[in-house]
Length: 65
Image (tube, rainbow, N blue to C red; front, side):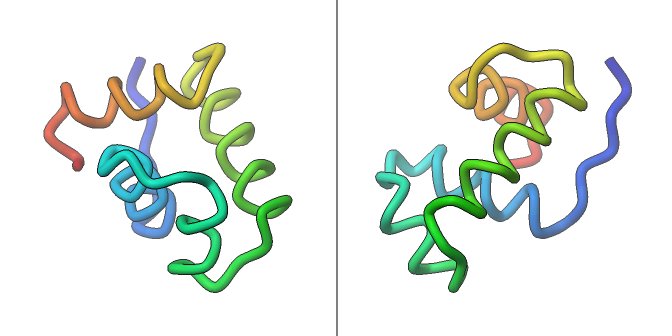
């Protein structure tokens, strides 16, 4: 899996890695909850992962967050 994530996507994963709930992540990024969900789904799809948790673990293991 050699996916390249954009800076905004890494920032989104970093906030989830801190254990923040979706509404707080959305507020910090000045996005709607729906947009955050859509972006997480896009990240998961691109990485071939089933859940946002897996995406966060993927990013942590690679030292991105």
